[in-house]
Length: 429
Ligand code: CMC
Image (tube, rainbow, N blue to C red):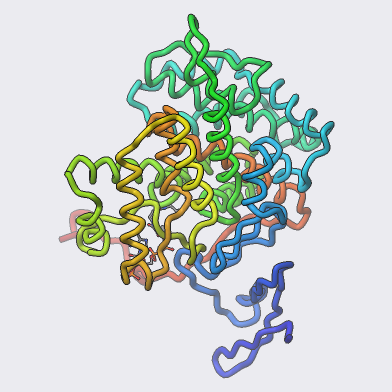
């Protein structure tokens, strides 16, 4: 196969090299396009733009394939844990027993927030959205580790990464407790990552939360399934910020902000709100499906559709099965699950959704599990952020480790007013 593409512009032909990924993905490298042709590319929403070369995660959206560092998501979901997967994403390999213990001990050692951070929490109103608190506090915590990105600290990257993975969970739990007016609960050294998070969320000073293994497992699975997803909006944001050599915490805080929106991580909250509204209106989903197809209604079937997957999102398949399992294990019958299943069935048999290849994505069923295990709806996107942290860190590290990294700085096609002369205010109409 030819390793170059031909481009004809203004009567002249140019050769552009083709880059081939290890899974056969093909990209036309346009790094010299503007210099040689005077043109740039225009790709609103970046649907056709590869922003980097990466070794972390592979997605085949047509076939519904997702692999972290080559390992199928189905195998990791079945056999791994969130923390082992975090190691895999950040360091590239599944850890030996000793390496996993070392990684996990580093997380435990770095779980505690600087005591002064507690005062920052005081200043948020109780109505603050936990995603706002999360991004602010991640950024604020970098103030406690000066020189985070300085050359002297490059070799301390593992500690900074551990601090971030571990503390995001502590900050998340504190932000929830703040919203409830509950006292903060410190992490316990003897608890593993996910169990410790549930403990910090739900224990009281006078009574420890009862940790049910099936609940811990379900949440760990949710973290693992969200751990990375190549160049999505928040990860691309993290890379964009990191490319300016901003520190790890600042880059991750920007990722949290990007994740918050309802078209991205905020969809898990939006799904439950949609299902609840359908339920409260007495609809079984049939009326809502009609509204979601009508562009003037402003409604979208949240938790459906994906920029990359044009097939069933493999994470949604795993989550749907886990959802049935956890609800029956906890003897919970949730009318929202019935509505979700009905919506899915209708959408998958409706030409509007079929023609546009809109399938359930990771957010469609995850909220029902979180509801069942007692996570409040405003914390859903925070849970996504905790899960995504290893992926953001792995992407940040890829930039840090690449001596050829350049600042990300897209161009634009200007369509505004051409040059005009300043008019003094008294002469303006
Ligand atoms: N409900 C109804 N119509 C939809 C939906 C939906 N959920 N998603 C896409 N469409 C329609 C869209 O209106 C467009 O129709 P037409 O071709 O007639 O103009 C067509 O399908 C293509 O959609 P698009 O908006 O151009 O697709 P996109 O790749 O820009 O957006 C998306 C992808 C995920 C933002 C979008 O599908 C969406 O808004 N879904 C609902 C929100 C959601 O669930 N987001 C979570 C994404 S997965 C987790 C994550 O990565 O954060």
